[in-house]
Image 1 (cartoon, one colour):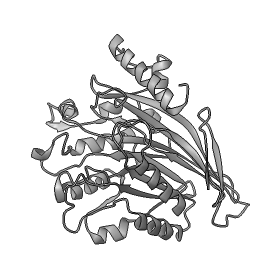
Image 2 (cartoon, helix red, strand yellow; image 1 turned 90 degrees about the vertical axis):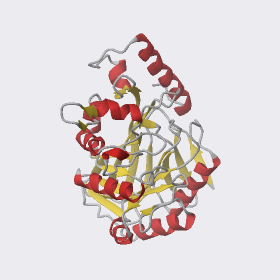
Image 3 (cartoon, helix red, strand yellow; image 1 turned 180 degrees about the vertical axis):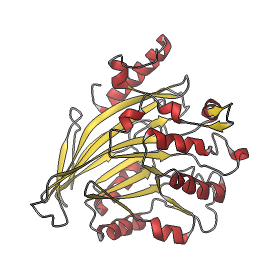
Length: 360
């Protein structure tokens, strides 16, 4: 039986007894992680990022007002919902995304460390798109998870376990589909599958991570409430032993909750959808997302995880710049919003507050 608890005043703490023996003499260790939602690159963004003098592309200007915030964490995760093909002729927006390497280098400069690549657009540009996306992320000093160039690559990278500040974190990434596009021979895109999730979590647990995080790409687009499929996959992941599940794909923010699993006697965190962190979508409530800041902590034999902060962000259509709400609210922005832009931003915050049950 699983009992659900409500998110309260931005802050909650859930405690899980460690499955491994940690000497009490060890000092308290902490890792602060920022999770953000979908990182997209629509056609208008491509035009904005093009640098006429150098004939190259640079996405960093989208992050100039948020990069300092991103860089305040030990780890920054995002969902790269585009591919990086090797040929410029393949650069395109919806429905088959292909972006320049300058999009990825901008993410690195902004402060990202890990990018999930298993999503419904993973196979948009075929084998070259899958391979070059992985290579470009690695060349820029970041870690890709969820897609693989061949079975050898899959066997080498399938279980990402990182050690940060003495805390071992396992991360696995899955998608519900590739939009019906055939995944090319030998390539691997990790798909949601009950048996696979259970086997993967069991296998990584043998490496004694302190925390297991699952990153899902799933659900129904533009729905503010999690659908049946999301709840199904969340239950599969939690029952398998995940501590944290992060979701994306709906392109709108959905609720975040702590779930107490009586059978396992522990608490687990679910963020059903983080919304769009960067895109050119402009329908109501698709033009923003949240920055979810978590702290993972080990103190003796006890593991603690808590939300440090939930920071709303909104994408300014003028230049596709990410604006975080606290800077806007405190009048700390180095850019003046028009009355219309201000209204769109505040309308987004109003809707987000209702969905999250938080008064921002």
